[in-house]
Amino acid sequence: QGQLVESGGGLVQPGGSLRLSCAFSGIIFSIRSIGWYRQAPGKQRELVAGFTSGDKVNYADSVKGRFTISRDNAKSTVYLQMNSLKPEDTAVYYCNADLRERGRGWNDYWGQGTQVTVSS
Image (cartoon, rainbow, N blue to C red; front, side):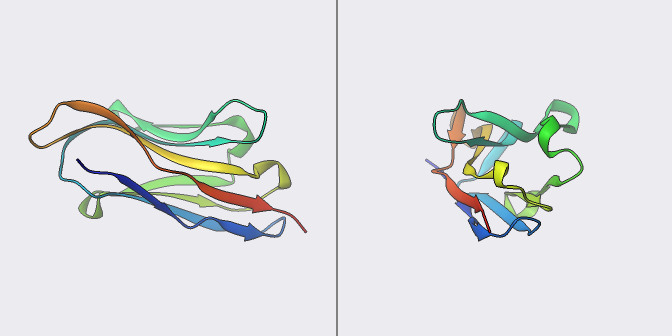
């Protein structure tokens, strides 16, 4: 079974930028949704940005104008470009996909998370 593998997290100063990547290692047959979530200590996991059916894009109000989600279908990869980062963006970021692999049924996949820390 395939997995979602994340990369790109790290430590940046306020106002800096990071680009997160998430690649699926299996063979994708169909996709219903793709997204990025984040979770800070003591807080619920929240949707940051995502694609839904029909390629509709949703962003959390707190990141609109600063973050951009994109994808490369040929590479089975989704990205999150994060600009003008703020300390409030500090969290573990997870990618998620509701997809069907070739030869398998629908399943909900999660990356293992990557830490993003914004501080001076």
